[in-house]
Image 1 (cartoon, rainbow, N blue to C red):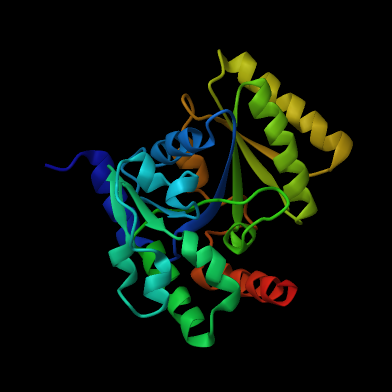
Image 2 (image 1 turned 30 degrees about the horizontal axis):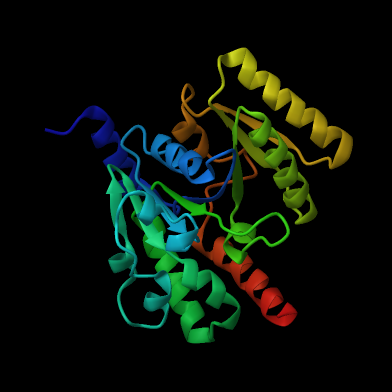
Length: 261
């Protein structure tokens, strides 16, 4: 028998007219992958389905490795016509699917038109099967990937520690330099609400004095309904991210990367 939350989630997917939103996930702390997993799990609350495109290689912090799954089935194979995009999806936890894409990230600047068309169709299919499409981002502030640049929303999860705060400042500076319009912030591991809000206030003060990148408070991963916040459009002028809009930006960044290379 289905729970009410499962039924509501099913109805959302049945009647949704726009594809699932796309968010690039950045994590700052002593164990970034653990922070990412904690956040992705929180995003499945309310029987939501989250598909995570994982840019990390197995030996560099991949989600499949963390859950004890063998490597294989990179998204690139689907773009080359070797298998269907749905065959790349691995359910690693209730409501959470992972799509390995480390090879894809490297190949994006080299894709031909046919492969770009398969990528567009594949992204649309992944969005159709999810309530949220998340990019588990690789790279660093000096080298953002095309997927991270193309995402309509960016979420930075900050561990409440000195390491987390210092790393967050670096991400903020890098994202501002990359032209991010705004950055959503969630805090993890704070002692209490006052500790979490104090950390956000310090980051907000840093951006105001140094980079001017607007920060949006999303609360604490452990205590607030992060899934509600990240599956709701960000303001009246920011509707749910469409497949075409994401792909259009992805193509633009891919072209630039190819020219630069």
